Image 1: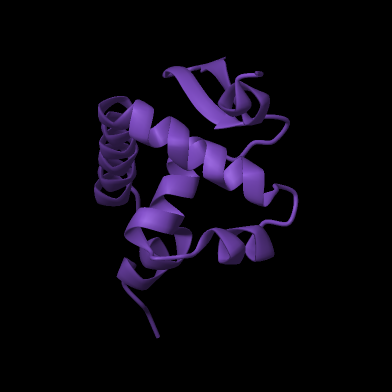
Image 2: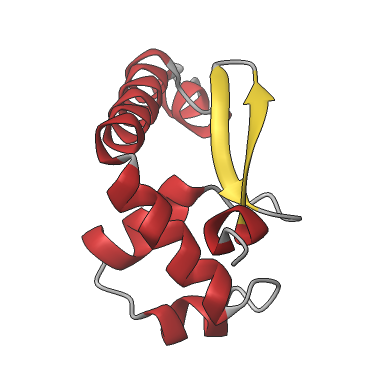
Length: 104
């Protein structure tokens, strides 16, 4: 019997280390987990919003997550920390413009 998860999930090297993603796509396993576990989307809803992946891909990603839960949760935490650091240190051009004194 073939390893079904490996048919649908691949691990690729990235700038911050290896990342598990749906095979043949740029959708990370952690994205599928967030959509399903954190946002409450059903597997069917995920496929509806991201039609480049299949229902089997979603279920394989979730199975991979449960087999590698601490690793995926760590990646989610790391991503959240990067986003938060960016938000604290970045001001948009509009924010900069609004902060400038207005003359006239």
